[in-house]
Length: 219
Image (cartoon, rainbow, N blue to C red; front, side, top):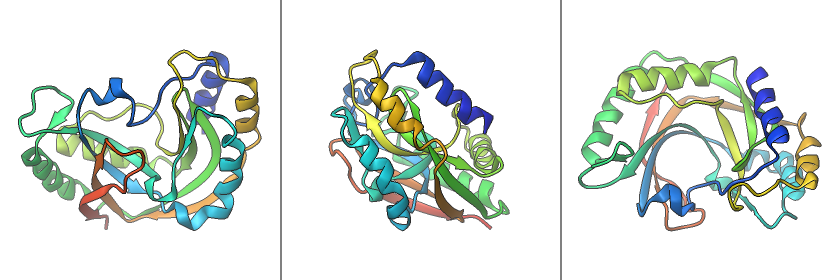
């Protein structure tokens, strides 16, 4: 909880936006596909609770709202899929198969758990729903990172609701901060985490359905 409060305090204090999301050319670097380990967001179950938040954000022209099928909790970004990796942010299909094998070992015996989705929050590049779970998602990230030889991401796990696609450094309107603040205490619902997905995202599309390469069950 304290980490989410710190994120919100930094956003309000900094009052700056940036171009967030997979359509950012500076992030893409000319790549076509990005691979990740994720938890499905099951957003269609919570339409009535999510819609007021979407309505609050919809008036801002730089907000790009996620459709239900695109919403997920990213555990680890694996890299851009290429035939022959050259950079640290690139990964081959052979490496993805190795990660899958190691992830299945890491997940063996890892218990199913519940995540409570609640409260609107924001980074400079995105608005998101907080994921409250007593630290289990963080433990899951750590287990996967160690087993698969990956770097554990910084920052709290979250369910992204929208990207802010504004020029880096653009001042966040006071109206945006007020709109988010109205939903800082807003329960969404609970999801059961019983599997981890390895997905591939087509970076050429605005909101493609992520292609599932593997689905790995928890105990």
